[in-house]
Image (cartoon, rainbow, N blue to C red; front, side, top):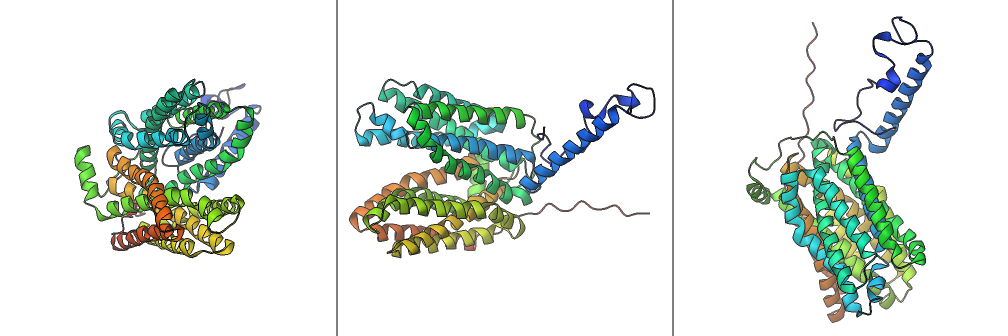
Length: 459
């Protein structure tokens, strides 16, 4: 009932046939307006539409409804993956393979997602964002459904690899579409809202995963497929007729290959790539891989402390995501990226020096704030550089930077932890943060506000 609207916001209250009654005042009588019987219905429908529009404005803060739809898609994807993730290695082990082989079902997904991202960018340029989005979600849904029926480890590995290809198509196309449905001064908030969908889905998924695994080790695959089908439905219903913007960005209008080269010549785009790599390496890679081991082996605490730290960081990120995006739209991308990089540096230094639960929890809180800032502002920078145009490969390169960091982070962290200890491994993350601070401090501001519409002179 509350769906609808174009990229410019809520549609005008013109009504439809169901609410506005017959044209030309038709009805039970031939008077000049709607009949007395139809008037209450007309008034009620208009009130409902007005209420829905008000709810949509409050929830999205003036953003187009397509942003809410994309956040809903992100929530569905993250919810399903969060349910599946804890069961995936255990299910792989049920085929009698080694622990190392079991972890490859996770690595092959990430690897295929990484290597297929440039191809996903090319598909976005060729077929359009919405077609690639629906197709990518469909591929992940189908591969997950079939994986639930897998009778051998080899088939499970192949199907997870196919899912990685679909994931790349979804991620690149969804981000590209997000940048094309909002004005330049809305990109920070839009990116924050989109990331919030992933965050809340990622929190809810593992909480439900234990219940689903209780039914069967195969059940999470089917639930994941169902959440992806729901995401496809949202895409087809709410994003099929989306009005796309085509504003001018910093990069020149050119062929796609030249567009990527032009973007790489821009210092702001290079800073966004570096920040996304650092955020992926530190926040998603190094922190996720080392913190559970660090808590048990160095702090001599139970796994519950690690869980509390991750929960505290996620809460800080959830609270600050949208405000950070709003600040990026109002104050500029550069200050938010500098602040996020400084928080990343402070969090990693605190983590490297922590020797007790209080300092550890403080570090996780600071890192959550950093993730909020670095989840919205760099994405807005990419939108500013490529403009509201179809620049799939430039967007794919931005996504790949995070994927590379996520893959490299655990490997570097593990080697350092084994050779010189956990403190130095976390300090390596601080070194990466120093680089991002330097790059964001020297980058130009990319926010270009849409000029106000001139008011015609009266008289």
